[in-house]
Length: 202
Ligand SMILES: Cc1cc2nc3c(=O)[nH]c(=O)nc-3n(C[C@H](O)[C@H](O)[C@H](O)COP(=O)(O)O)c2cc1C
Image (cartoon, rainbow, N blue to C red; front, side, top):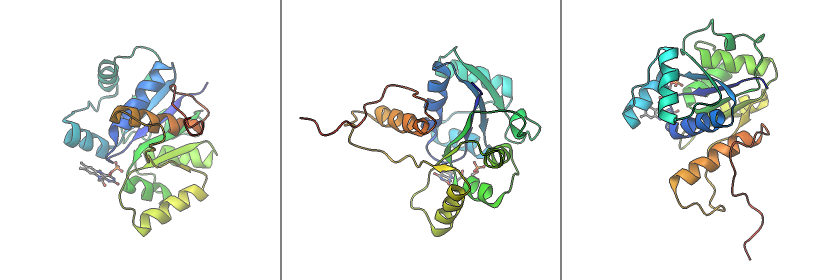
């Protein structure tokens, strides 16, 4: 199985990214992880977390924080355009951007590949590989909506992390897990058991 690219940008839903990374590694998947510069800022602002920029130190950081030894993790700097995942010749299974800021949405839609996340998304679209985008903003303005529509037309899946209550969640963590597992449903990868809708309870 080819590796996933997991990209995290500076939007306000980073616990989703952390949980996705944890599930993927627990399931033994190979993951190439890229945090944008904005993602580092938001991790610091919202969670008081200073995440190492150096790829090897960052890998250690995630292994410790998520307490998972399985799977394969490669971290990349946001501006490393020479990274393997910047090239279409490097095979990947899919790219998931969670959460995806409106800035990144706009730049990908405009074809501006200024950092590694944008370049890698560009590659997934041109190679016709799955690109799942989990946008986070509220409310959306018309520019956001047009950019998201354009990305859907170009082949991306727009999977906004919108919660559901039919699972009767008891905690925020359950809600997070639901959103993360649903992101990967379209890639036919069951990341964790899920309380799915099976019709009304008797
Ligand atoms: C605490 C915090 C929360 C933010 N939340 C969002 C958000 O939910 N959605 C969004 O589009 N931008 C959000 N931003 C703004 C982006 O981080 C900013 O536009 C950044 O330049 C995006 O860069 P990136 O797309 O390269 O990560 C937030 C910024 C901060 C500091």
